[in-house]
Image 1 (cartoon, one colour):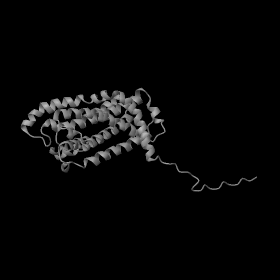
Image 2 (image 1 turned 30 degrees about the vertical axis):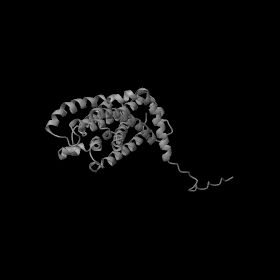
Image 3 (image 1 turned 30 degrees about the horizontal axis):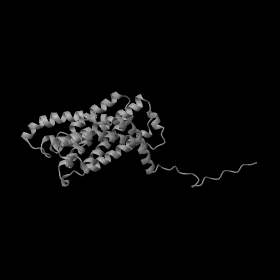
Length: 279
């Protein structure tokens, strides 16, 4: 008996694959973050104090030591003295260091040592949710450490409102998001802990000194100014300083969209890296 040919598939017979909805991605992000938080909550004091050593050294060496001589020679652009001038930069510096380093080493530990990272890749969640969950954990690390630096800044200056206003905290969170997102990408790509050291030595350490933490970038020559303003930490340092000491009319509002776009771009890159991760 001659078989009848199959009818052609209609347009409605093929069901399109549904893209993940935003509420699902947000829920998965919080789930991934909660798993990270369960590991972080038992080490809050350790995390908060880890990034406090370097800022304290800079505060005593530059703010109190070198700052005394500078205060006799000149007045800083903002703040009553050089110590007040560098304190917002120290907050930015500590948040950058811990957000990046803590996130990178956490992912490297899961990939290279405990070998538990494959379990994360098997989770039925969107790659963007994996990135955002890890990034939120990095933001939490950065806020813990920078919170201790803010406490030191308040003790030295007595200006609580300068360091605990909404604009200051928003900038601080965006800075943590940028460097936590960068830490996720680096943690996914490196093959050994030695490679992490290379990123730290050639990216984080130079940015610590060139990111406007100890000087006013607007006073630099044009060529150097272009280089310095390519660093995201520069926008954070300048903006935190303005949020702490200057009126809103003098605040560099362009810093907010720049940091936000950087965080979003790193999130897209991180989601892409997660979707193509093999280990």
